[in-house]
Image (tube, rainbow, N blue to C red; front, side, top):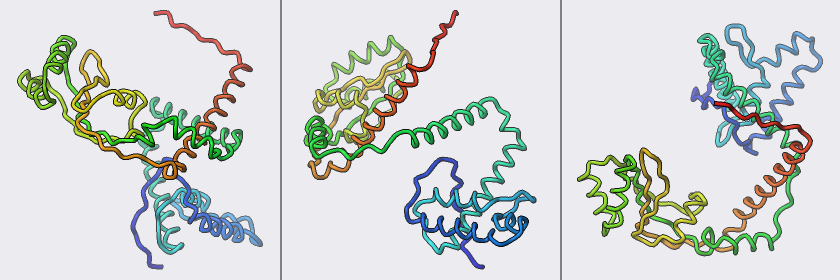
Length: 292
C-alpha cells in the first residue's frame, strides 16, 4: 500500500481529542475487537499487534491512544493510521535509547516521572469526582461583564517598552533618579547607554487579558509616557513604559462565550477547593520546621 511517509510529531503531552477522529478511533477499536472473535488465543493476540521493534510488540491499543490525541490531521483513515503507527514506533525507539543510556535511573528524571504520574492520577480522580458545573446564567454573565470593564467595555491595547536592566542596588538608585529626570523614554535609554549599563529594550503590544492582575492594576493609573516598575531584585530592575493605547472594547455579545468559560472554570476550581478542604479536615497534617 502506497502512503505518505510524512511523520507525525512525537507527542508526550496530553492533547485535546478532536471530535472528527472519534469515529475513526471507534472503527479501529471495533475492528480490533472483531478480529479477535472466533479465533484462537494466539490468533487473537496476533490481531492486536500493529508492529514489532526487534520482536517487541506495539499494540493496536497504543496506536489508538495516539490517534485519540491527534488534532488537525487530514487524509484517508488508512494513511492516518499508518502515520500514527510510525509515530508510536518513533516514540518507542527513543524510549529504548533513553533506557539504554540509563536516563530512567537519573534522580531528576525519576522525580519528574513521579510528578507527572501524580498529575495524571489527580486529573483522572478530579474528572470522576467533580461534576460538570451548570452553565452560567445570563445574569451572572452580565454581572461579570460589568464588574470587569478593563477586560470588556473599556478594553484597550497597550503599546509598551519593556526595559530589562542589569544593575546593582547602587546603580538602581541612580537610574531611577535619571528616569524621573528624563523627558522621554528615548532620553532615558540614551542615559543608560552613556552609563554603559546593560539592558534589553523589548517593544511589545499587550491586551489586558494577556497581563497579570498586577500589570492590569498598574496600567489603569499609568498615563501614556509614564513608566512603572514591574519587578526589582538586587541584580536588576524591570521598567515598563506605556507608549500608547488603542481602545478595543468587547461588547457583551462578543464577550459572552469567553465569560461563560471563565465562570465555568471558576466554579470548577471552587469545587476542587471545597474537596481539598474536606480532605484536609479529615487528615492529620503536621508541618515540620527546619532547624538550620
